[in-house]
Image (cartoon, rainbow, N blue to C red):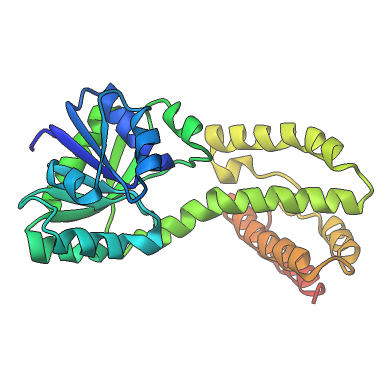
Length: 294
């Protein structure tokens, strides 16, 4: 397991800058920031003690670990361009930080430069550079790719005070979908709940003030007990009358709301069955009531 002495961050935006700052805090000696836009790269370098802005190829050529932190639709292009410039050292570890893409997209770095490649996704939301830089250690990273690359990045991630986990290339897309459900779709779910409150003539600000404690306590319960034990509500107690009231009330709501309610309700029926709080007969009746929405 080789220790990382020099790190290159290609595309020092929110995530890249945060990783560079964390690496400096963890004692990585040399950090090179490479970007297409000189002014943005210089701005990022101000946040990373001792780091200097470079051209992308120059930054990559100085490092034994290269993180490509550009947007997903640019990763393949940047990797190809850098490989064609022979920017990667032979044996260097090259990884991108996309949650959705696997390491195959970095193949030119292997073929043209003899690098070893991986994908390394920190499972964290980064709303801004300032928020990203301020993050405390403890992030979980999910890694796939060449075994040497995964081993090296695992060591680096541990050095940051974070937690590395290996996953398969085949599992990468469904892993990312799960992350989207937990993060992005939770945001959408909260927005939908607020829309429904407004349909009940409840002011949006008041609605969130009322729902927020409910949401946070639910998350605490899930954390302490797991989803099955934390589940409450009309489906969990086999209250088909209340479910029917919901179905009736939502008949004139936008289709997206109705589809979302039914999809979540049917999954909740499955969860309640797993918990053992409802039997097959109750599950069937509630599912039929839900089917009346369309």
